Image 1 (cartoon, helix red, strand yellow):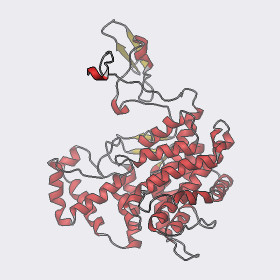
Image 2 (cartoon, one colour):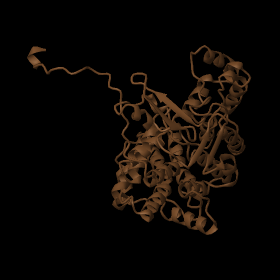
Image 3 (spheres, helix red, strand yellow):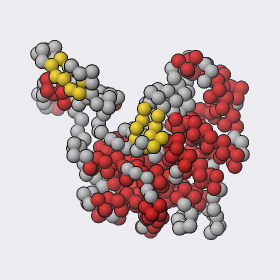
Image 4 (cartoon, one colour):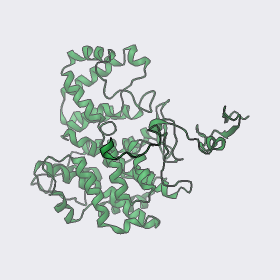
Amino acid sequence: MSENSITITDNRSGRSATAPIEHGVFPSAMVRELDKGLFMYDPAFLSTASCASSITDLDGANGILRYRGYPIEQLAEQSTFLEVAYLLIHGELPDKAEHEQWVHDITFHTYIHENIGSFMRGFNHDAHPMGMMVSVMAALSTFYPEAKDIDDTQNRLIQITRVIAKIPTIAAFTYRHSVGLPREYPVNHLDYTANFLRMMWAVADPNHEPDPVLAKALDVLLILHADHEQNCSTTTMRTVGSAQADPFIAVAAATCGLYGPLHGGANEQVINMLHEIGSIDEVPAYVERVKRGEVLLQGFGHRVYKNFDPRATIIKKTADEVFAVTGTNPLLDIALKLEEVALKDSYFIDRKLYPNVDFYSGLIYEAMGFPMDFFTVLFAIGRAPGWLAHWVELINDPEQKIYRPRQAYIGTEARDYVDIDAR
């Protein structure tokens, strides 16, 4: 037997099946070779590779994250979010002409239909921005019925462009709805992130332009969040996309996955934790409570990274640049002290609990003025290109079918119906 293969033996029948191991996985179909009624039980898909993808290489053991082969460190330092979005969707970085056309097309599609504004006015003033985002994104499907022609390559690209272009506009509109401000429309002379910040914060100032340091910081954060392999929201995007849903509906579904606090709400939980700690002096006591299992250390450790999160180092540098503009934040001092104490403690070192991207992103967002319930919306803006890249890859993959996992039925065996008067 080859070193790069695996053999499974069915002890009931004595039959064996062998399959190759490639890229750390083997085909589960080998199990059905032994017994066609046999399925693998894998709660939460912890050991299941649902697809073969060439988009993101995530090596959790060694703290490596690459988009299409490019290290996240290089992209965050040298690239822009729109260039990274092009890379994720097209597979290669654009040349100058391609980049100019891409930026032009995104800018051209940033406006949303005026009837969407009427639709949004139906939400309560205290509606959660993610709930509004989900609803508006799904509603866009009705404005572009041609999006359902997913087999037309050029048509797909137009819809992808629309999603990436319109999602920051929708996001800004949800915020301004929540605070009772009139909508601020996009302008053509600002880049993607600066345009978004202007739509968020401009009030009766047609010449308002965001601080370039803050615009650049947000651009970096969007790059860091642009894709992260088969997480909950991306898997949702692929699941809904496998039914041949259009990209607006699929992105709305993916946004629902991100809406859950266990996925998109981690940085909000970090801010809540820092507020709970309250001061630098209380950090050691809080760490001891963590070690006793009384509370959780939010923003440390990761489901996939078993070493350090490569995005955390980048985001910490970005945080320094943001606070140089916005001023100091007492929560930052608590965070720095918490990181210092935890990284010197064998309890956390032995468990490889290092700060992740969420540990600092919430601090940056809060310093820039974003309310906490808006943090996940920012995550969605960044993740949209990754979702769409996976949607296209799914459509083009001949091995993919409509997602249909099986279950292990553990319910009651067959029984007869009893009339209600006899129960």
